[in-house]
Length: 248
Image (cartoon, rainbow, N blue to C red):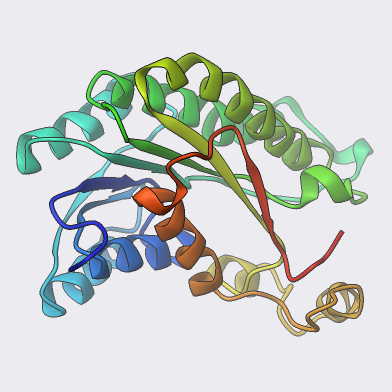
């Protein structure tokens, strides 16, 4: 029997990369999945098509999670279409690296609005529908521990995600709702390829410091998300799971 049969999941930022991998993996385990996107309708539609062709259930919903009305509408669409909500994956995020002298208010607010405020608004909207045994899965980053140069703003947002995960685990725990974070290392995605990380000296340097000797793939993260979504992780909350091949 599928581990998530009868469950409903919302995955934000799921039109590509880690989010797409998580949405596909949750659907493969029987969950009906809402594939959220902000701009790439074609990407989200492709994820939905992949899920439905494999016999799963999914819909694509456009929403800017940093907008309170959009975040609420995203959750409302999930409940209207599938009747309930059991899993929320807060994956939406942006990352642009900049040295201190290049940081601007616009750079700061773009990152914090999506990476932090978006997580809070979506979880706030979802919490009204989540019940005993539900799971909120935040996507953080290993950068909150590595604190690499030229990542001050991005790293700050992921440090905030770490802190929020702990706080919300305490707020929602009495209702039986678990809140955990997956903190990936370097993952090969469309985004990491677009900014020139894949194949770069930076990638080689990261691999050299990684005990498992490689960067990650989206399914390396998706499998952990499935674990956190299922009853197998029923006694875990407030945890920050580093999934980075041993990179520290």
